[in-house]
Structures are given as C-alpha cells and as structure tokens.
Image (cartoon, rainbow, N blue to C red; front, side, top):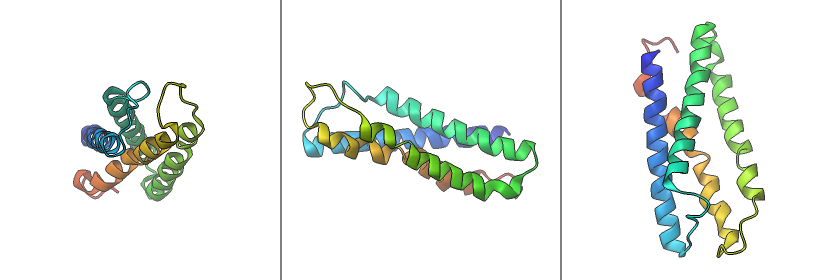
Length: 131
C-alpha cells in the first residue's frame, strides 16, 4: 500500500511539473498572462490531488480483491479526464484578461497530464505482479 501511495505522489509531482512547464512555454510562445486565474500552486495541487484520487481507486481494487477490474478503472480515469475539460471550456474570464480565447488551449491539455503520468509510470510501481 505504501508503494501505491508513493506512486500517486510521484505521478502527481511529475504531472504538476509537466503542467508548469507547459504553462511557461504556452504563455511565452503566445505572449499571454493568465496568472490571475491559474498559477503554479493550483497546477501542482490539482495534479497531486488527481493522482491521489487515482491511487485511492487502485487501493480500493486491492482491498476488495477486484484486481481484474483494473482495465475498467483505467477507462473510468480516462472518461473523467475528458469530462473535466467541460469546466475550462465553458469558463468566462474577467474582462481585463487579454486573449481569453487562448485560455482553453492552455488548461485543457493539463487535465490529461495526471492520468498520463499515473498510467505511464505504473509499471515501475507494480507490486509483485498482483495486477
């Protein structure tokens, strides 16, 4: 169980770092500034929380001995990642923000970073072939 928690935290930190790097590259390339809406703390926090929630799902599978449902849990994680983009797409920004039409291009990809990190590094944290 400890290994699973470490997996979630590491995945959260990796996805948060990827999100911060993407934020910096995106804002520099397009000359935008969304610091009033999104910042490093919110990116890191959302990434870690998302990966911890995925960890809880995997822990529940182990606890209830339903390891064969791992594929369905992965599918649920992907569906929830897609569903989470509805908020930023429909978000109305303050009037003083320049280029509000570019905001979804910044935050929508970030919603997939936690799932991508969690599922990508999973093989490094497998526990004695239980899954």
